[in-house]
Image (cartoon, rainbow, N blue to C red; front, side, top):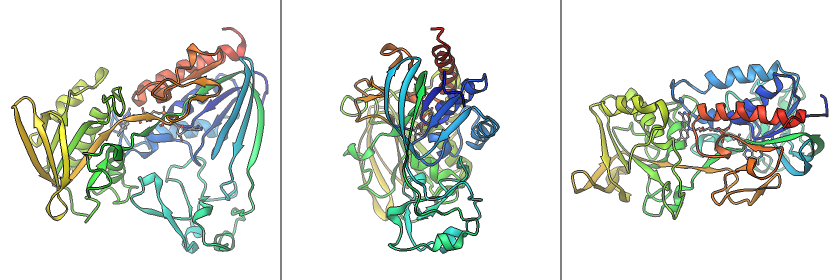
Length: 417
Ligand SMILES: Cc1cc2nc3c(=O)[nH]c(=O)nc-3n(C[C@H](O)[C@H](O)[C@H](O)COP(=O)(O)OP(=O)(O)OC[C@H]3O[C@@H](n4cnc5c(N)ncnc54)[C@H](O)[C@@H]3O)c2cc1C
């Protein structure tokens, strides 16, 4: 790799991967740093994604193929950028790579999980099931390599070491520190779901069968906790009636003051998931107004036209436990000017996208705005942000933004801006 004119990309979701590929495929050397053990970000957790409603494999696999064939991208997963100093053209960067305890000899044979006696909560499935302490982060993981959650291991256990005939498990693996110089930096750190427990009237984590939209994606997915069957968590009953609560935390000064821009489309997509499995299911969507940026208006019309979809303009006041695992939703119906009480099988809170960096004040020396987004271009030459790290957007907009951002990063690397 050529040290001069390198580009550092922080965050390996669709935005970071796109930036890395676009810059490297015209010959720039790129270092892509992802904090989790696999690339893919939030997109890898979807059952399907709009506009085409295809599974994440259809977008990510082609990108992974491009990455595998590309000698110009150095990927560091399970890694963090500790420090960025200097100026455009010659930033000094420190990276910490934490041990995964499984090396590149791993072939994914799964013999290690067969002998592993310990379990851990599966964050990929939003904590709704468990994996063994040694696990593959997900079926599409890149790199396709197992990882050990050491704190979850039984003390002194080394059964996975003995079971691995390829010598891939290395319990002595150490943290590495890497120092390098780059010409430009792109922040693509994306988002996390807003913590719905803060919405005290919405029953998340107190009322059984009130979930958030990320849990809904995982429940609908064949690699999710119910193998794609839409069952309510408390008793695995197939869902026959469901409420979606829009703007759960978004557009609210006390929570997220901005519109997350995709939650309306997310719930309409989820309504489709439910109706595909059970066309008789009753779907109620409470909204303030339905916001569908750009070309997505058709999608709204299509879902709205479904006979079992009931769109209600009004705010949800309270969610409480009903009988036999049911959930009771109390809300207003502004248009019909009346109060509504619905008793349903499950409630999905359409929680918004909060920047991953919320809680920090800076990244790479760049000040975050009051919501945690990274308006980098205005602050320092040679540092850029893209995708949801910059503002709440869909995948298509993230990809377009990241392609443009790659160009800006290249211009800095070539000293032409
Ligand atoms: C419920 C829901 C459904 C959605 N459905 C769709 C859909 O169907 N279609 C669509 O177009 N959009 C959809 N979206 C929006 C979509 O998720 C985003 O557009 C997309 O994830 C943006 O990608 P990104 O790479 O910017 O961020 P992310 O996907 O969040 O990726 C960011 C990456 O950066 C990593 N990272 C974070 N911090 C650090 C750090 N400090 N150091 C290193 N790495 C870090 C993260 O681990 C992650 O891998 C949906 C959103 C929600 C909430």
